[in-house]
Image (cartoon, helix red, strand yellow):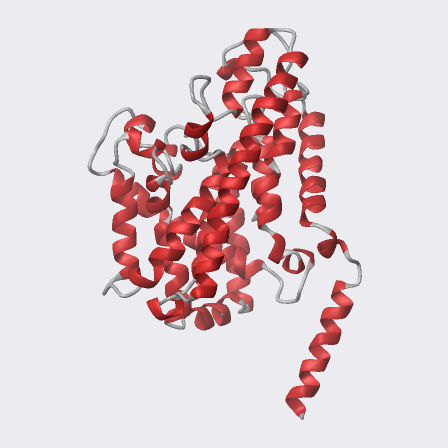
Length: 368
């Protein structure tokens, strides 16, 4: 999931968003990445108030502090590195402003305190939501129908007025992604995880999962509608429906419910296809938030060097599309970047050997 989000941020922008392969990739990302993160976070979160002890509260506090540190660093990097570099690289000042505004979530009129305590810097909203979910989850699970209520809240949140999406702690995004977090909580609390695991690892279920993923990708490649525009009314989370659809209709909640079901089915299919043995990514999983948080620095550097486009000003929808070789190089660069950010622990060659040794030791202990 971390690799997918790094790739989408690096490879998809105004210079690639009309290429079929990236549009299809974008529709996959919408139903997998953040929903998958929320699902796994919920699975490992406290499920009743008694579990919210001092150690867990300290973790939540550390997460909140980490968010403000990351927000501050991105503000400083944007103001003192990204913007000056972009203006120096682009010959056309107007075009430089177009790319700066596309990748800078803050306006020129905002003072530092507004930026720090205002809208999160793009992907950092997840840290905000994680703090709220971690504090809310033990009490939410005391409700009679926690999953059903979370789905209702998510559908209602998409109808909130646009200013709420810019408020402190992004409450609308937090509420819209709530169902996946609560489902993760419920899986562990009610023991659904064991039955789902046995079902997912069945050989026929794995074959069905492969067919499901292939059909979904094929459908997206041949999709007559835009995954960003028409279907984006239901798929894209974190933007008011009043802005996405320019109207508000009571039946839109049906589309959001369908997206939740589609997302859960696709995540289950991916889980069924995953190997049971420890791999490179499972070994690096403990540090997954590091590349998630820091990778956007490399995205901004690519934009600032004019890698995607450095010509005269054009409307965003008329931006010349990136050549195939450049798209391929950018994709490979996203993989290398994520590999680098995972850290030394994930790059150790003997991690599989040590995992086998640990398995043997555990087997001997069981025999004893």
